[in-house]
Image (tube, rainbow, N blue to C red):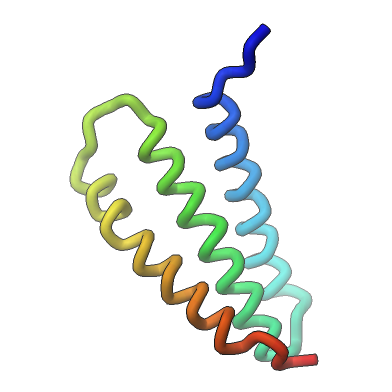
Length: 93
């Protein structure tokens, strides 16, 4: 039996969403160091928005205005979070 790439991408997107949400919850509940909080938030943003992009791309239906907004804004949020992760690398230790 051949694995379905679309199904693998969908499951991976949901796993990334769960991990990103877990990072946000950990940031709000447990983490006290401000730099680590920012880094957890940024990692969560990257995971969640990339998962949203994946789900929008693999969905076969026509795109509505919300999907178009996500397609335009998600890469901007991901780039900003990755830039901030690069800037805070090595801090908060």
